[in-house]
Amino acid sequence: MTRIFTALPALLAFAAPAVAQDRAEVVATYADIAAAGYEDSLLKARALQDATRALIETPSAEALEAAKAAWLAARVPYQQTEVFRFGNPIVDDWEGRVNAWPLDEGLIDYVDGDTPSAENQLAGLNVIANPRFTLSGEEIDATEITPALIEQTLHEADAVEANVATGYHAIEFLLWGQDLNGTAPGAGARPWTDYATGEDCTGGNCDRRADYLAAATELLVSDLDWMAQQWTEAGAARETLMADPEAAVAVMLTGMGSLSYGEQAGERMKLGVMLNDPEEEHDCFSDNTHNSHYYDGLGMRNVYHGEYLRTDGRLVSGPSLADLLAAADADVAAELSADIDTTMIELGRIKTAAEAGFSYDMMLARGNAEGEALIMGAVDALVDQTRSIERAVAALGLDQIGFAGSDSLDSPDAVFQ
Image (cartoon, rainbow, N blue to C red; front, side, top):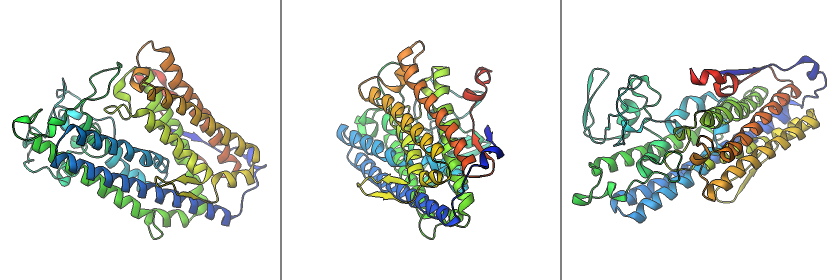
């Protein structure tokens, strides 16, 4: 669903458009932040790959915990890059390979209670336990689990989006296992012995589980490497934006508005509150959703203020969207800055509460007024932020922009139909 905003001519009369060169400088900063964010994501994914290799080669409780820690660290820079979606086709066409969710995890490995359904006949496939299976009438030889198998055969098999076989969340499931706690405390609790050898192996097929984890992590690294290349000086994503700086500014605002409104406020937050469903958590196996939400918000702030703090402490900064907007309409610029700060405060409250033991899935429990208030405080802030982004579109004299929407915000009754 797309929420359309059309700039009002009456507002445009008061805008003082910045010169084209200013816009080019702002777009260059945007591309520099994207390049740094994807490079950091790649570096952290390589560290995750090292940790998973150590788990596979020498399984132990300590090795599993180290791999989990590496996965959590890898999410920090990646979530800050989600603001580059929704306007850059090169990112939109690629993103489902690395961050698709939610997933029917029974496609990959053993689960409690998942069986084929009318909506997804592969929900209980368990490719780790089944080296041969039938897909769309064709016999598939999955004796060897490779990146090609999971990417080209399993991922979104039968055109079902819930058949997620690649990316962060497939790896998350392989490290944590199912979270069977519902809205009670606790994340997934996969034992390290699921990667053990010989008689110590639990869950069955430990060698194939290790092969799947290795293949999925290899594919994640490869995908991030490819995307990082697209934002280098000669990269296709950067060149496309720099060729038309005015259109690129619209892309920046489209990414901010769509992530803020339809994706984060709607699909990732309000929908879960409406359904009281922990399966709607973004990082549902690891109970890391509070961090995913926080760093999504930070990514939008990065783009607006033209600065990104890299994981090694270096600051990437330059002429910003905030500067451009302030030259056109100082009041709108200040309003959007204040709204972004409010969003970060509300997301920070969720993060702080979760880190103190009140996890995000507990917040989603039916009748939990405190949890609902925390989540909806952030939802409301994100919606207000989006309204200010709409005013920024007008102030900058841009053509109409479509922001991604969500039934949870736009047509709540449709959620239950």
